[in-house]
Each structure stands twice: as structure tokens, then as C-alpha cells.
Amino acid sequence: MKYGIYYAYWEKEWGGQFVPYVEKCRRLGFDILEVACGAFHLEEDSFFRELRQAASDNGILLTGGYGPRPEHNLASADEAAVERAFAFYADMFRKMELAGIDRIGGALSSFWPVDFSKPMDKPGDRERSVRRMGRLADMAADRGITLCMEALNRFEGYMINDAAECVSYVRQGDRPNVKVMLDTFHMNIEEDDMAGAIRTAGDLLCHFHTGECNRKVPGQGRMPWKEIGEALREVGFDGYAVMEPFVRRGGQIERDIHIWRELRAGITGEMLDQVYAISLLTGERVSNVVVMGTGEPLDNYDSLVRFLELLTDEKGLHISARNITVSTCGLVPQMRKLAREKLQITLALSLHAATDEKRRSLMPVANRYGIGELMEACREYFERTGRRITFEYSLVGGVNDTREDARLLAALAGPLRCHVNLIPVNPIKEREYVQSEAGRIQAFKNMLEKNGINVTIRREMGRDIDGACGQLRRSYMQEDQTC
Image (cartoon, rainbow, N blue to C red; front, top):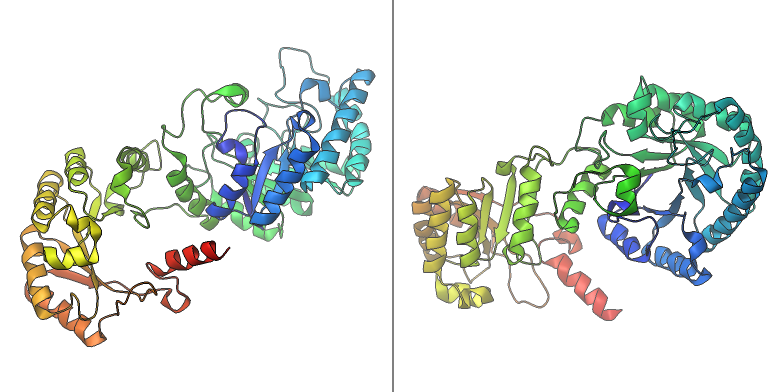
């Protein structure tokens, strides 16, 4: 099974520029980007060649989606209108082939969204739709394209509402490139048994959309994902699972999907994207978050605080604040500001030395903020929040790993009841730092504990492949410069 996301998670309009989202998908770890095909007739061939090249460069598969407009309704009684629809699809399929898109899903059996104020002739419409679908399928097959018939809930469609109707339609059409498509959002409304619906579709299931009951991203609501996953494994599903959340207000997407409130609470998308991607790829709810890395979180203060609010809000991801850690190199004004927020997160300070002289040799930021200022900011944070701070301390052989260093560190950590996390430094080619010997690390730990300090030694992972802390960034930069 391969995993993807629908581009509209980031957009307000159908169509637009898809290329930027190809690289975004790669960075987030997805296999697939799904794009809207309804505006393909407005684009030149070069648009699709560029999209194909971007997908190839980034190792991303492309799929298509389309909710046919009324003028493209294959169930229509207007023969002339249907012929125009076939011409529209012929152009769409040609451009899909140019872009390397081998499947398209949606309410292809009729149109979307349905205007329910007008009378429906479901038996007659179905007969016309099935008959014409054979012709459409043959046109698609000539371009190597599979048509995925989507079962929609009763408030958006009428032709195919559940898995049983979808299977019946596909079998009646009798074309090998016409398959079943299910969507958990629609299934939640129409199906008595989610797993049973998947079993009904069986080996006809080709495309699977995932989303919560309110169209938020998977893993943040009450959808029975374990049951759904087990059913997909049971039927041997080896198709594409594409996340299709609709969470942004504005534009035609808001009007068509009926998004009357902002479901991302105004958060800058990239940080939240990472949490959602992990949730989708693991199939589990994310319960712990650490904000750190190449970059200073407190330099992006406003977005960071909005992110933390959304993570902890009961209407958002609802992650316990005590399960969130924010790391800082020691930006004193922002640390004080964060203290006044009175959040119950854990603040981790990258200290690495207990004197100004040694810290300046290790961290340029120490030239701006001294140990004294840092400790005052830490004290304010502890007093305002009641949350103890973690001191991150990288042990560098012959630099900051003596008994005297340990004694000075204990003197700083003790009054604040700080936790100390000892980090055996990882070798990096542009630095001459070496890791302290194992015995010296243990002696340093023992000295801290003797002084009443709670201390741990970080477990090393990834050093053998240059993927540990600091190493991966350096390897990536060297590779980028070589290219």
C-alpha cells in the first residue's frame, strides 16, 4: 500500500499550481500527491510535462480527482450535452497521460455536488450512466487510466451511496479499468459496518480516501482506524490510500465542501503537517512532540505559540502540554515571554557548559546572553509555570567533561531543580570535537547525582550511518553543495 495526500489540504480553490506540493509531499514522507483534474482544460501541455518531471525528480506518484460539473454528467438525458462531456474527458485523459497520472477518482457516474432541489430519476440515470461508462472506460484505457467510482454520502450524491451500490455498478459496467473507490468520511454516514464495507468491495477496491468524520486529518477524531486497517489487510488491499482532509476556509472549496469554520485555527501549516503525516503513516495518534532541530524554535515565536495552542486544544489535536518539549539555545527575552504564557510544556535549554568562557567557545549565542541572564530567565520560567527545566549538556572530550565542570553544572541546576540530559557528542567532520570516554561520562553522571541532580544519558541512535544529532544535517549540506 502507498500513502498520499490531496493537494486541497493546503488550498482554497480547485486547480492551480501543483508542482510546489510535489516537493512538499516528498519532504513529508508521502508517496502520492492527488490533484484536481477539473481545470485541466485551461492548461497548456507544458503544464503537465512540468508536473510529470517534478513528480519524477521527487519520486512522487500522481493521482487525479474530479467531481464532475453538471455539464459533464454522463447520466444526463441530454445526448448533445453528453457528447460534449465525452470531448471534455478525452482532453482530460490526454493531459493526464502527459502528466503521468494513471487513475482518477470521484463521482464519475454522475455529477457533484448534486442539486437536490430538482427531481431525480435514479433508475433511468443509472441505466444511462452504466451504459456510457463503458465508452468512457475504453477512452481511459487507451491512455492507461483506471476510473475509480466513488461512493458518496446521501447529502452529496445519489447514484452510488455505499459500497454495495458501488460494487454493483462496477460489475454491471464490466470493464477491467473501472474499480471501486471508498472514502471513510462518506462511509461513516452510509455504512452500518466500516470493515464490512471494505470486505464487500474486496479485490475491486482500487483507491481509498481517508479522513475523519468532520473531514479533519486521520487520527485526530473517532474513526475506527484499527478496524479499517485490519479490513484492508484482510482483503489484501495494495492500492493507494490518500488522505483527503478539508480544513481551510475560503474559495470555491469552502462553498462546495461547506467549511464554515477554520479547522486549522490559523496555524502555519508546515509544523502541523509533520504531526499529521506521522499520524497517517503510523496509523497511531501522536501523543508526544519535541520542537527542536536545525533552527531556533523561539526565533519563530508567534507561530510556535499558535502551534502549541492547537496541539493542546481539546478541539485540535488535544495532546497533553506535559508531553510537549520545546528546545532553545537560550534566547533570554523569548524565554521570559514564554514564561508569561504559563504553558505546561517542558522547556529544554541547550546549556553545554557551566561557565561563560566555555559556553562562548561552544555556542555563538553565548556572546549575547551570559550564564547569569540565562539562569534568571530559567528561574522566572520555573516560578511562573511550576515546570522544571531540562538542561541539555553535550559532553565533549577534554572540553567540558571534568569533575569541576560537573560540580559547576550541579550548582546551576540544583536551585532550579533542573533535570540534566547528558549527550555524548557525535563526531562531525567540520569540528574537532571528540566524544568523552565511557568511564568519564559515567563519572560525570555520578558526580551530578551525588549533588542531588536528576540526570539521564541520552541513548545514541544513528551514529553508525551519520544520522545522529548534527551528523545528518552536515551530510545533507555536503550532498546539496556537491549537486
